[in-house]
Image 1 (cartoon, rainbow, N blue to C red):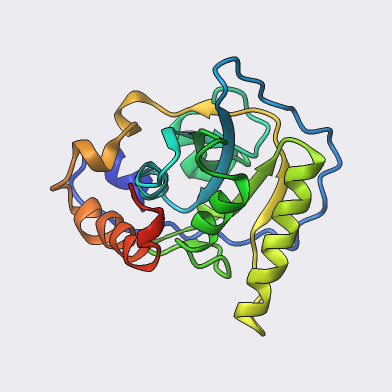
Image 2 (image 1 turned 90 degrees about the vertical axis):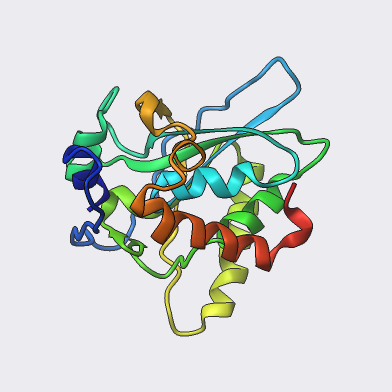
Length: 212
């Protein structure tokens, strides 16, 4: 369990195994649009450990910054320990700040789906609600693009169901400081060596044209 690793002072790594809570029911809440004044845009994705996802998106051309945090639940200002318990409804998520003149939202979706297995309830070795596959949309255009991408990916997996949740964006809570740039700042940490780096390298080999 990645949560347990940190809780035990970074001594070892493992996985979490929460039981899925059934099929997703469409969330009809009105999405919140994040408006920036610097010409950049924000997008929100979750697909397993945010250490891994942060490193992947940071390697992509047109991405200016990636922040690890939590979203998808109802608990305000959750802590890492609370999210890891599975009781808050939140997932580990990254905020991707990107330049729309250099990369499109559609390309971010390619990065997202091309760097995970969306048919599982998490990404090995981390499973459970905190590590589920989830994308947040801020408007109808993004929702349609997400649903189109999900449908195309579903064709690739044939009989396996793509389990990515598609939710209206409501709030993003930045994770604790020690989670930010974790892979870059802790290159020799066992979890980074065994999980994060291999996942990043697989992505780079698959999409070399997208890498900075």
